[in-house]
Structure formats: C-alpha cells, structure tokens
Image 1: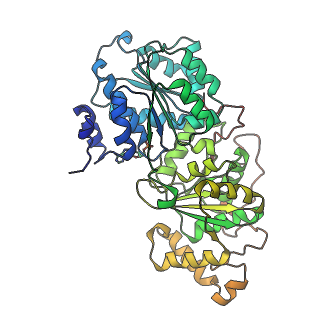
Image 2: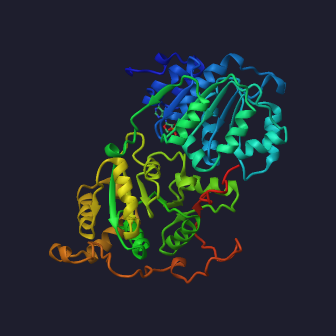
Length: 480
Ligand code: AMP
C-alpha cells in the first residue's frame, strides 16, 4: 500500500478509477501538493515543469470541482465552458486535452481543444455543441471569441499552463484580452517552470492569495541527468553529432537548435549521414507534425530536431538523450531542454556541443545550475564510451545492426591510449581537429542532394526529414 495514495487526496471514485487505469500507484509530489488546495477552490501558483505530473496535478482536482455539474444532456446550453486551460503550443494543448479525456472518462464532462494551423470548422462545431473543459492556445481562442463561436461567461476555473513560455512567446496581450472575456470571480491556477519577474507580475495581477506549490524537479538536473559538454568547433558539430549517435548506438534523441532554418538543415544533413531524422516544417500541416512526433515516440525515427518553442511541453516518456547542438541563449531554456530527459525517475544524458562563441552561454547555464558541468574531451569521450561498453550499459546499446556497426567501427579504429593523450582522434576515429567530410556509405544518403528548394516537394530526402518547429521569430506566433 502506497504511503500516500490518490484516495487520501479525497478524489472521487470516478477519478480514482481513471487514475488506476493509468497504472499510477501514488501521486507525484506536485500532485500531492497541488490537488488539496485546488479542491478547496484556492488559487494556486505552481512551479513545475513537464515531466513532474503537473497535468494530472491540475486536471484531476479541476474535474472533481466540475463533477457535480456533469450531465448527459444533449443541449449545448447545459455544457458551458466551465474550465479554460491556456497553453503556449498546439502540441501541449493536444497533450493536455488528451489527459483531460483520460482522467474524465468516467464523468459526463465534455472537453475539446482549439489551436491554430488547422481548420476552424470542426473546432467551431465542437464549441457549438458545448464543452465543459476547453483547452486552447491563445491566438486561436481569440479567433473563436471574435467569431462568437464560444462564450467564456461561465468559466469558473482558469489554468495558465507553462505561463513562462506563453510570455516568452509574446502571448501576454492575447492573454489579457482573454482575461477580459472571463468572469471576475473564478479560480486561477498558474503553472510555470521558471518564475521571472514578468511571471511574478502576471501572477500578482491574476492570483488571489495563491497557495504556492513548489516541488523539487523530479528530473532535477543534478540528480538524474548527467551533463556532458563537448567543446568543438562549430564546423565540426555535425560530424561529432553523427559520431555520437553512431558510436553510442543512440536510438532516440531530441536534438536542439536555436533557429528554424538550422533545424531544417541539420535534419536534412543527418539524413545524408544515414541517420533517420524526423522533422516538421512550420509550413507543414498539423497532422504532419503529429505524425512526426508519433513516429519519434514509436522509436521509428532516431533524431527529432527541435527548436525550444516547438519542443516545449512534449510528452515523451523516458527519453534517454537530449543533445544541445547549439546552446540556448537563455539558461532557463537549458533547464527546459534537459527536462525532456531523466524523467520518471530514469537517468538521462544531456549532451551539449559547445563552440567557442557559445562559451558565454555555458557560463550562464553553470551559474544557474550552480555547478561546473563536466567537459568531455576527445580523450574523455573515448574512455567513457569504452566504460559504457564494458559495463554493458543497455542505454548505450542499440539493437541489431546499429550496435554491431558501432562495435566493428571502434575495433577497427581504436587509438592506443598513449596516442590518445596527444591526439585529437578519439577511440572510434573521430578527429576533432579536422574539417568535416560527409560520411561515406551507400544508399540515398550518399547521393548529392539538391539544395533546399522553396518548393515543398522538391529537394526532399526520401527519409522522413523534418524539424519539429515552432521556432518562429518572437514577433510571430506559431500557434494560434
Ligand atoms: P506531465 O508532467 O503532466 O507532462 O506528466 C508526465 C508523465 O507522468 C505523463 O506521461 C503522465 O502520464 C505521467 N504521470 C502523471 N502522474 C503520474 C503518477 N502519479 N504516477 C506515474 N506517472 C504519472
């Protein structure tokens, strides 16, 4: 019997059943702390990032508060929007709505999600039919409000999820306009991974005598994520990335870049190196973005190249590797990025390829984390790679041909330890000092590929290459 159960949080049987169906044994710390005050109707300010179980932390009590009003009437008037959850990105919106569906399956409460980049019509129909829980990105919600597709006059609970990211993305004016459409009396819940002055200002305006709920991150950087810094010239990054993926038999890695165009290019270049890189361009449809994410989750794609905005809130369980191809300029983004790994109590690795011009960002990150992150030189790399292999560490071992590839490569080219000290060549032959030459090999990856063409159909690799984007200039909104 768990020391601290969901039942002890006084959740109703319908929710306890739904939680049990998910196989959850006990509440996570954020759930244990956030559920009681939310059930009491208090405003809550939660400091928690994705991976802590925060979605259930606000969704379960929210559903319980709405449960007395659940009804099976067909009349839209009996299903006004009673809870509004705002999220920064469409992916997060879709994930939150999915959670609401899962946890509300034994309750007669309706839910829907609205976000930009897709047809308004099906969303409009769902809104007209009536929903109690509406999950939305701000821009698209405003579109629906302007078209009078939805009324927010009966909202009792407002949730701002990943509020810091919404502000980063310039959603504050939209949020203010949405707030103006809400009743003044309501319960407000604000969740954020970081608390900047801007967030505190918003919280001060929005929340009434909030309960502050803060939990040590489940994936606290110091505990579960091992950081590795590779100092490498910018021009050698791609070669090093390919090398790391191959030599460690990495099966699934989220690779971060800062700019949308670099995400496109890197995904394409990895494809040329024979690494299956997944991506979604901002001009691709929502369905295509979701498909790429689904393929990645199913392990059919090895690398997902993402910008910070696009990757925000992605729910990918047990992601073993996050690779910072470029360091973010804000140290908080580093914490967000590595929040994708080391989840659910499992260890993860955060690998950063840092060029000389990025050292100042590394200093900022280390200041935030209050520690110096371990540098991996070519020599370190070869040794740690060897250690992982000697220990039979499964996390490094790919299945089938990839693992064999790696082993045969390293046996072929291993450098004598005495040489390694002097040399910039690592155990599997990677020379950090040389300019990059594309890997040899066979198949489509070795064929010259046309430069990227403005036409979406020309110059595409046969491999699923895409970059999970949303990395638009800050004056634009990726999701409406
Ligand atoms: P979140 O931080 O809300 O994105 O949740 C992260 C992951 O934790 C999701 O895959 C949830 O399904 C899972 N999760 C949420 N609550 C629990 C729990 N009490 N026990 C185990 N897993 C959970």
